Image (cartoon, rainbow, N blue to C red; front, side, top):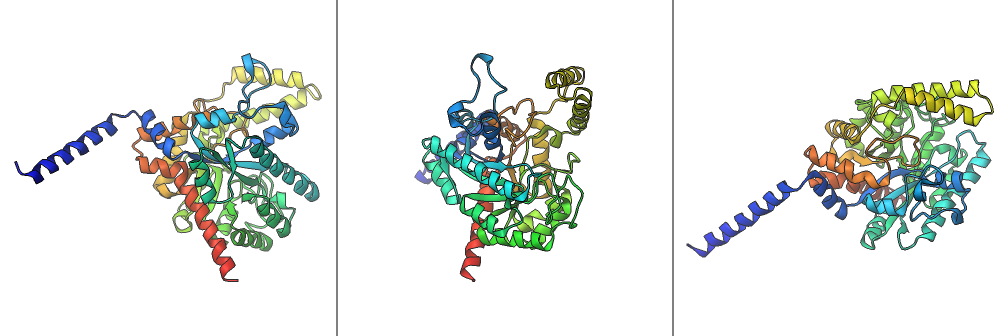
Length: 412
């Protein structure tokens, strides 16, 4: 046999052996293999709010390396700590800095700076595990050093107190995205969950988006109305993100992204970071959540000033009306839909851990991302697809946002 034929047969044998080995892997093994090299960048986690509310920002009261109570004692555990971030193959996290939309402007600005300070202090407390990331390059540097890239996302434009100067200084303090609204409509942008004022963005709202482009801050369209989404897409020169939203075409919910908007993402380049909030991803759970909120109001009316009685009432109601089951399969259905409408390049993950009262049954905290990626692998998503969803797509959005800002600075 000629030498060339021997080499070709050997190469074919190796290729067949590799394909057989890949095929033999379980979905769980595929997920772990991908995430070990391309760890998740999650778009939204509310741990800073938990640190403020539970511990008044006092870092001596908790250990973020492990926030689980010992032997079943203590308060309800947080969804997040370093040990479980590691277990969940998280390589980057946007920490949400959220403050109450009802606060007066001055107090809102004051509080959001305190929340940004929480993030900086958290990173300083754990330099061996966490690293501040301001750019896509910083995220990759953190991965290479074995640290979790820590980014700051401002949740709600009320945080800037109607001031572009405050927006600029928030960016200077490290904020790399801003959600234009939270639940409440602003003077300059309409929320998805409140009555409109501007029919989308006002003139000042347009200037906010343009200034975010100039700075290199990602425009986050979670929480905003469909009209605001479209106005922002009309104005922005950089890709947008939805830091924690899912697909309205699967589950009708004002917090989800309509198909008409999804169809615009390929032109814009933006990404929907699919969230795990049960009421956003399951119609049955959405209806249960509405009933649960009604019972909370009933409990407050029946037992004013008596927290124990209210809790007992709600516990009794929940025993009689258990929450409908939600699993990773429901989340994967939303990912399927966004892929089918917008394409694989426009999907990310934004769990909303520590910002939600209820979680999917098998996605209970930040250690569980591999469960979702195993479900996607089982549905036939390639390793390249999984890598894009885990981090590739949001990294591209960051790079393009940075490039837009650099071009603006060059063309002054």
